[in-house]
Amino acid sequence: MPILEVDFICLDERSTSSDLARRIVDGAAEVFGSSPGETWVRLNLVDRSRYAENGGGPPEGVLPVIVRVLKRRSPRGASLASEVEALTQAIAKACERPPENVHLIYAPDAEGRVAFGGHIVGL
Image (tube, rainbow, N blue to C red; front, side, top):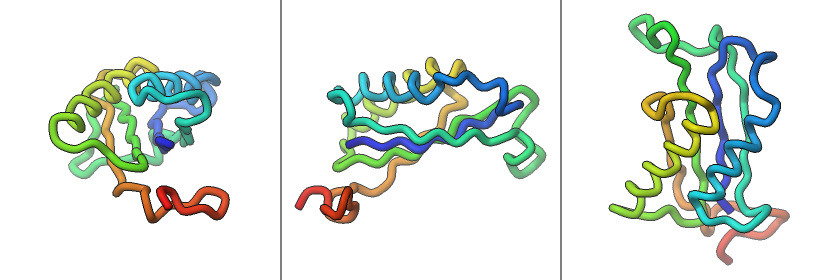
């Protein structure tokens, strides 16, 4: 049930590929080993003018991709580090951005606190 919410900072929303969400979800599903329909992506296109960093950043030409990851249970330790590396690479490839511009934020485990269709995950 991994769900990714992706903020894709772009120069022009109209020039963003129409299959970007599909490329991201397919890459993420491969990393997670998901069956069809188990991994979801919600893509938010964020115009560069609506993104800023303190100190005047980001540098010219740097367009971050910020991804919030929600899973039933996230791995821990070395397993998490391995997943982060693979997911970062998959998203960078899908977005055609360097991996150092992809930032992942793991949400607390969904088990016992998130509901789908009125049913709590994990209960």
